[in-house]
Image 1 (cartoon, rainbow, N blue to C red):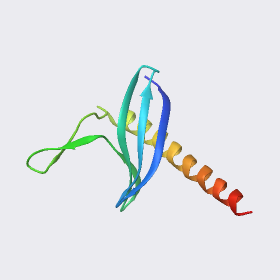
Image 2: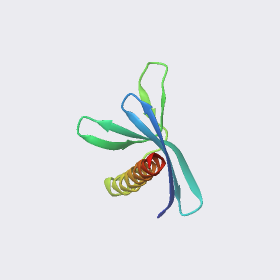
Image 3: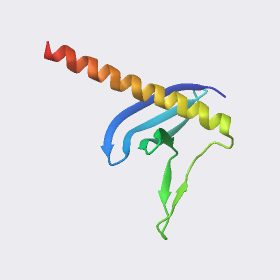
Length: 95
């Protein structure tokens, strides 16, 4: 399985700094992965829903650490690239 596309958009909701969608093998997409700025740095949280008791339950998640690492690496790379491009564009607008 390969990640064939990652799209990310910046938001600012407390610790959540971005939302991402990941396409696998050009045939399956997972939306609403969250880029979180946590106590130990940035990480990717899987899409989840709030249960009636107030707890959150993942809707989709990797079954092993290797896949989790692959997803996190791809999403964070796209997130920081998007931020870099946004900053460069803002600098060009200032000159």
